[in-house]
Amino acid sequence: TGESDAEWERDEKTETLLHRALERQGFSYTDTSVYGQRQRHVYMRGVDLSDGAGAEDIRLCAQSILGGRLSVPEFSLDGAYVSAAMHSVPMFGIKSGRYSSAGLRDETSGDSVCSFKNSEGYFYTLVSDGMGSGRDAALTSGISAAFLEKLLIAGCPMKGALEMLNCFIRGSEGECFTTVDLMEADLITGRARFIKSGAAPSFVVRGGQLFRLHSKTVPVGIIRALDAEAISFDLQEGDTVIMMSDGVTGNYEDCPWLYELLCSGLMHMDSPAAAARLIGERAAQTMGKEDDITVCVMQVERA
Image 1 (cartoon, rainbow, N blue to C red):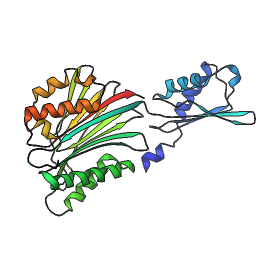
Image 2: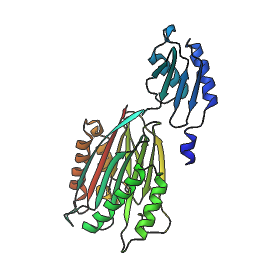
Image 3: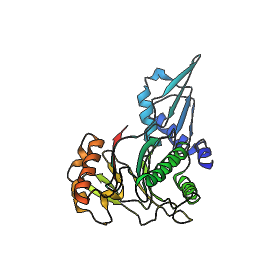
Image 4: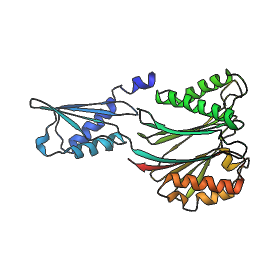
């Protein structure tokens, strides 16, 4: 693809800036090459380690120019000729926990939730709520979650994966629709994106403040063209992201009890799974148990 090709384009402007920075630090080497945009690759040749420059010094200097986070230099020796290589590594890690319970209408929950990473440094969480209840809803949401997981792990962009899912569901027999709440967190750059199709609001707790992410879209499979809204923001260390099905919020635009709970220090719990359970059980007490309830809590940490 064009994006993957760009990852191996040489960045001569950054090479010049890095060369000047290394020279100011007194590092001695023959030449350096920088490739990539999102994932950075730095190659240094003819490195002279006799001047006392250490691996961590070189890494920190390169990070100050390239931004992001780089691996510790890997040195290779060919006779007296020393080379070094550094590559982008994740800036963030995410701990996640979930809670699900079936509503009173059926013993089988129609919600599906999963979290996974792909080989390119992206972390995903998906909450899918099959329309209706019971086994039919569970089958629709489960197939949708598995379909999207396979595509995203293979490197398919989120919008393209959802468009294919929309076509797949519309081509199926019967009226099987599902909401999709999909978060993609780029662990290398720290950029997070939500795509919502008919999904309940999500929340971000940051520094004692509560941010609500919502959209007015319809579930996947209802109309020919995908109806989805994208929301983007930059992750910060200490962020807590909460995703849920509409069994938690019901049909209400405002949920004072939920806002109060999320701002009460709950998100400082060590276990995301315990936080998810507390939200889910409080929802059952407050909103009733008619609908399926699913909650996923994610805590953002420095890698």
